[in-house]
Amino acid sequence: MSKHDQTTPNRRRFFGRVATVFGAIGAAAVLRPQSGKDTAPAAETPAPAEKRGYAETAHVRKYYDKARF
Amino acid sequence: MSTPEPQELRSRVYGLLGHLLAGPPSAELLQRLAAVETDSAADEPLPRAWRGLSAAARSADPEALDDEYHALFIGLGRGELVPYASWYLTGLLMEQPLADLRRDLQRLGIERRMAVSEPEDHAAALCQAMALLCADTTEIEPQQAFVSQHLAPWLGRFFSDLQQAETADFYRAVAALGLAFLEFEQQFLAIDSIPTRSHKREGQSHEQA
Image (cartoon, each protein chain N blue to C red):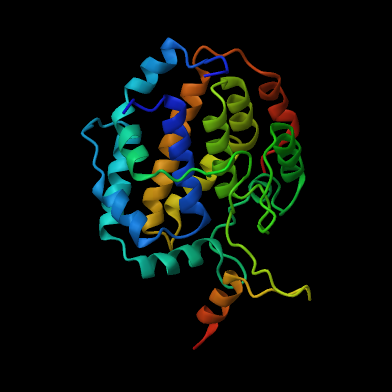
């Protein structure tokens, strides 16, 4: 590890109290953003449509689905 | 296989919360959440919250979850909750907290993907940014500063609101995990720490709405 590890013994002890829970969550959720410095989407990704100020995103499709009676 | 380091496991929890707040979970993720059990019977907030989420995943219907997510965060006009820091801290969208966040993300070298239209102060994006921070550095100070500046002032309130939201069912369990993890994080990061300048700035930067 190139950087100085500041996970001190006290932090490790504190972490150890719930380490098995973290292990379980970690096993179920290997979901962190994959590539380096890049935040993942907060919600949806607009379709790469023509630049006319309107894109039919998943949000928009969902809106019309929900509004259909 | 070696045991993952604390920062790797913390990163995964942030990643999971970010994923669940960014959209409804897939059937595959629900299966994984339901299948993994912990041998910890401890009656502490974090183990209890995890058992709750796992149980909620076992009884969840992916289609109903899609509707639940939509009612909570998107809605017709707006969802029951507005999951943005600016909204919680100022009562308006895209306000000073977003500007402060963008400045700090730029300094940390984290940026929004080109295709993403949501502002960076969405609860999901903040969790994902913390997932990156935990994964990329073992240095505690940047993590402390980011949590105290951008998560602590409002994310707990957001999770409390989510836990009590009328349309929430599965997401109550997500909120319980979020609350328990946030409490854990604040204690974990405070151990052996020296207050940073960001801690001191906190009161000056964001007024509670």
